Amino acid sequence: MRFVIMDWVPVVFVTFKVLVLGTGMYFAIKWHYDKAENGDRGAVLRTGGKMAAVFVLSLLCVVLFAFVLSRMLGLDLSFP
Image (cartoon, rainbow, N blue to C red; front, side, top):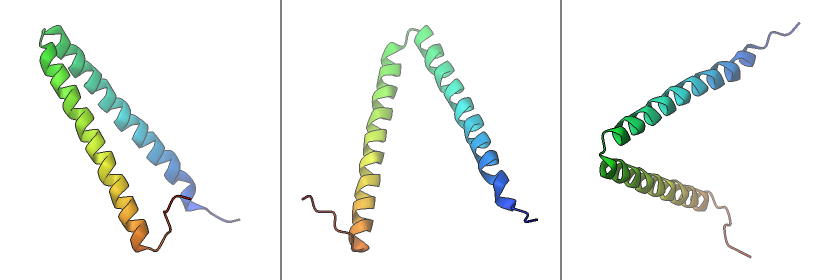
């Protein structure tokens, strides 16, 4: 009989990820709802715009890093 120790790793990590992301989403939604109730709609829109800009910049950095890394490794990324 072969004992496989890695069978529990995906279960634990996926469970942890769901709990952390679920908790984060709950508090993010609660924070936005509370901000909207106070009538400070401009702050919510500014924060949303900032988060969108950070996301786009992060995505651009990841794509650029992947492109540079693949070029360094000698992968051909030219379009046909």
